[in-house]
Image (cartoon, rainbow over all chains, first blue to last red; front, side, top):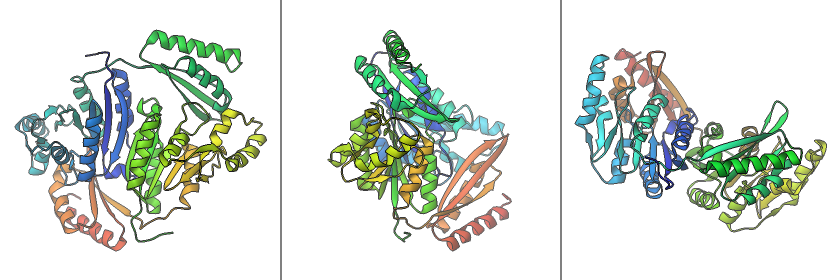
Length: 247
Length: 247
């Protein structure tokens, strides 16, 4: 569904290993790009450790504020996987082995010759009232409860769950972005760019500098859900840059 | 300084481009690793857009809760760089061009033949009462106000500022990590690992699965500030894994 209302989202990354720096997060960028592509505006990300109080506080703060919250991590079979229980606590519901989840896991595990031990059945523990999110990679599902979508932390599994989950979500206008690259330090074009932003207050404009192989490079990015207005702003900026010999 | 008290930190990443997915953050992992190495425990990360109210709310929530807060992004010369003003607002102080910052920038800019325009002087705007954080890459400094360290978003500049800033910080015990890699899915060793965690409740244990080239791989990570205790827990885990033929 695509509408004209702005749909917002937050991401809550759960995992000690990200905060210790041992594992570098690869999910935030994937989710951010995907949400932008489908017309959901990602507004905030939080990373917390494997600490129930922090997960509960994070998910409750974010679900009150945004249309959707996506969590990653902490739904595996080991004792440090406490996301399902923490989400249950945040919603004040029980968390038990869910026959629907077992039914998804059983045939896949049987086919792979993996026993469905009590440890593995931890992955079938789902908060009461949640819908399952299918995991086409390794069977053990994520879930959606209220406006919170709970996904695995392993990037390939997270991607599969993200695709499965977002088919059911409301989406808003898609915000398109265009950019112009100027081979100058951003300080050179800052005044011109600020003046252009004042001309188009409804188009969000950002400047992203880098210094590549001894050359200054500034990427000017313009964003708007209105393609015609965006092209107008882009063409106007290009003209202004050419006039001042920046392009 | 190294003490026995736990020193905590949070990171606040500021930037629309990260939330849109166009730019992938590379600073969180760098800061996380660095803080772990020097004995500061990173407890939370937040990413917000270039929105004053969100930056102010984020920095105020985090500085009340943790020993230090590190921010990245939004201190360049363009109109979308609003971090210095937002931090000033969070602390209730004025933000003006700081002669100390100008003195750092002037000789470097002169040597590179770059004019110190009014746009560039925006980068010398520092909240009242802040100390400067030296930028050995491109001169325009970061700053430290109260327990908040404000750094650039460009990774090379951020790294230089991080090293400069952390020399002045209190640090706590260094938490060492050791790991054992098991070539089994984590569900196989979950019960053994949980039992081992119960034997060593003071050693933090986490399990990180992956599936590489058709092989299951589970990394068991143990963390403690006490090297002898950590080695005891590691050796005990290794014995238990060997006994059950997991290694």
